[in-house]
Image 1 (cartoon, rainbow, N blue to C red):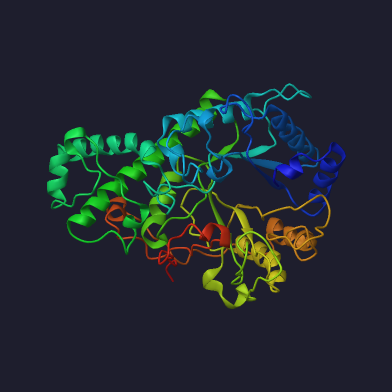
Image 2: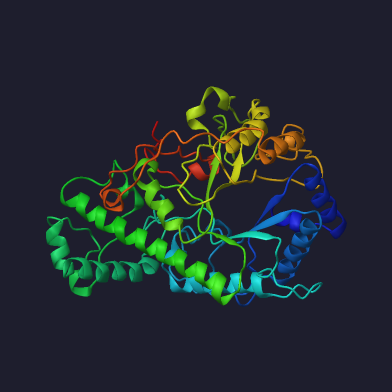
Length: 452
């Protein structure tokens, strides 16, 4: 559910909570920005909205339904001067990748997390950090240093990446003895912003870390060093974020570090999942749809668009429900849907329930509830429809009662980190099942399918 539903009047919120429970739902992801875009202090959340989240969680709890809190997605942040994130003037103002390395962005995130989790509920005096109905807290949504949005100079201002590139130079000096020796080990594979004397070394776009982009010889060795550095930075931030939520804020729920894809699933997904393991639950997203084209086709259904119907049952290799579980961790799918238009959407709820149960997926969250009652429009991500929520009661029984037996492990792969940093990749990789909006961030020629 998004902010529009969280902000419903109390009667509608209670009605929605009861309706979801009657349909067999026992977990709801509350997914939306909590920062105050109009406030003088951008590190402070919108406390009026936090109160609505508290009331929404209370309504769910009264019906025996848990909640997951998702409060940060770079696409929700429109950088303005008050944020203190200089360099975004005249370009994309969504701060993708910054949370993993930028101290100011991390300070904003900590302020939002503190306001959300430590503000006492006016009704109970209890904070959401202490709320037993909170099943999990997401650190961040759909961001990664290993996805195409990591693109210094294009998606990330050079003013924001400079400090990170200096950190890269310091890391190289520790690993190789000096930046000059690093360059020598790379066979002189230099980049435009390299300045060993000033202790700054350029970080390449994520494309240069893919199977098609890393190159060979010295270029490959340079890309391998950058991959090691980025993976260490992303994992370190997740460790610090988990510690902040647990130790500083007193959160008692599970913590989810990430849910995103990489620029090359076969080569990078193993490393991406490794950076998530400071958390408790590994997560992923996926969508399956036809080929919709035309004005706004990535996020809306409009007159004049064209589309191609597509059944997932006839294209199982592209299923967004494909999961490579990491041993020792529960696994969830917190966003999945068959976007409109596609006349085969009726297969979605039962296929999701049966496939997730068969693969041992521990938490399945379908995206997204459109309102307290049936939807009256052709939503892009339909769920409040007879084809969607209308099938929930039976599908919830299939999934939660164990009607579909969890399958035997048919393929087990142990990934050696040294080999992963050398781009050896994995034999099995899940497909990058993006919807049209997320797929717009993939550069031409950058689409990579998973392994068979």
